[in-house]
Length: 196
Image 1 (spheres, rainbow, N blue to C red):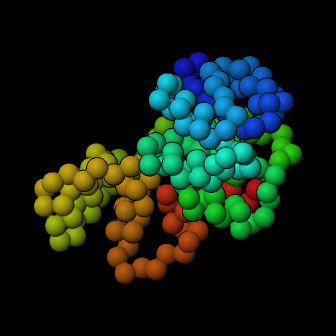
Image 2: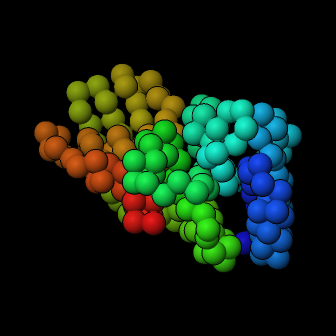
C-alpha cells in the first residue's frame, strides 16, 4: 500500500475512530477523520481522499445521506460501517452507491483487508478488460473497452468507471434480461455486501 493512500473515517464514536486510525496508520495509510457528515464533506475539499469508511448512524445527516452526496462528486470506494445488520439496510446502502457494508462489532484487520480489496479493484485490476476485447457498435453508439471510450455520433460521452462497466455489460448482450445481482457484480465487481 502506498503511503500516499488517504482514508477518511467518518464516525461519531471517537474510540472507534481512534482504533481504526491506529490500524490504518500501521498499514501505511494517511488517515483523516470526521465525527459527522458536514465535517466529512468539508474534508473532501481539503484532501485527496482515496477511500472512505462511513458510519450510518450519526447526528445530523446520516451515512446514507453522505454517500448519496459524495456519489455526486466522487467515484472512490465508499464503505458503510454500522450496527444495522438487516439485509434491507445493506441493500439500501448498495443501491445508493456504497461499495460495501461492514456490521459492528467487526474485526479491524478484516476492515483493513476489505479496504485493500476495494482499492485494488478501484485502481483497475478488477475491471480491466482483456486486450482485444471487441468494440460494441449499436446505431450511433460506440463502446470501446480498450480505451474505455464511449461515443454517440462521434461525440465522446463522459462516464465514470462503474457507468462504463455497466453499459458495456448491458450492450454486450442486447435483449438479455440481467438479474440485479449480475448488474451489481458488473458495476461493483463484488457481492461482499450481500454476503457479509
